[in-house]
Image (cartoon, rainbow, N blue to C red; front, top):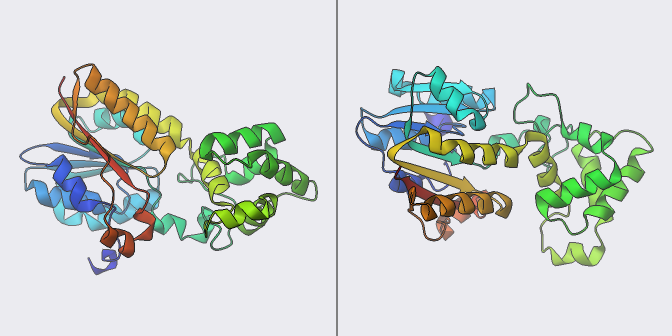
Length: 301
């Protein structure tokens, strides 16, 4: 297990405490990734607990399989979108889940892989797909969308105030040829953002929000989250606990609204009045955890 030592899932202990797995419960880890949260939940729940793991990234499924091997047939893994949680449960022969976790963050192994094109830290192709089987890439969107569509996409998925300037610069640049590399797009965006605004962002790269917006669009992340939240009531057992870790306000607002609506209808009890966030020690050990917010509910009926 040494090869997984560097992978510490965000808010691991807080997730275990909130979800409190036990007995013969069925856990669904909607974003199983490298299996860090899944491992902690299985260990905490004891020998009767079972887990279904879902992930869009087949490489993540392979890593989770290795990490969770010691739990044997208590673990079943499925490559797919968590929006299809109902279908996955049906295929697995299960009607409902007792514990559901969705960690909406992009894994460090994905961000740090230049071939994924998710980051401008190292040059790579403008890909950004979490599921390599899908057709649309960031390169497709950057080179095919009209200026207004591109500006709207960037603003809608990141609240980037300079979205129109950025879209205009992208369209102007692609007249000289397709934009195909992360470094090229990062340069175009940086030059489009006014110098005073770059200074005000205090070390945050000017292209951060544009890259976020494109990644969200390529993977339909917000649409998938909304579908998951809409599907959950149909697959939760009475007393089931649900936890979601979000990493930006666009996700967190949707989760907060859904949980509040369930509570207002008397269908769920909110387990977190305010989101749980990482402490200073965790942020120091994993700076990418700093924007994480954990919310939870207990399903009543």
